[in-house]
Image 1 (cartoon, rainbow, N blue to C red):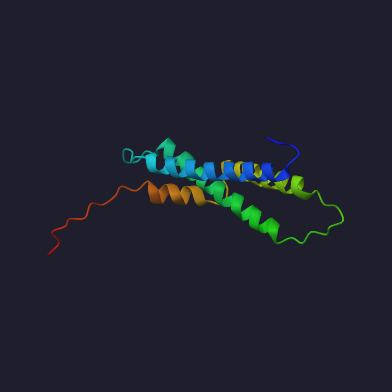
Image 2: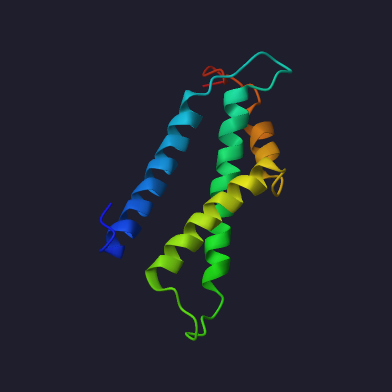
Length: 122
């Protein structure tokens, strides 16, 4: 990474976030229903990652509401640091129980799907 160009660092970070979002989507698509009564470890990990991603965006938006004084400003370096800090905080928060989104997703996505009969009176 070019240390003289802070925009290159920001662009690399945003590319990393997009890759992480795509990876999460692929992980959710690769999860297959497991036996009844057993939670799939891949599904659990995907739900926890989804909660972590949600918390990361939540922290980012919350931080955007705080007015900056301009007295002490770190510029682009501070922006990069706080965005990385938000990502790591969201991972820690999610692994410590988070806000309860992962268990809800796990419950919803872990249900067996009902097959609808196409001859319901048609």
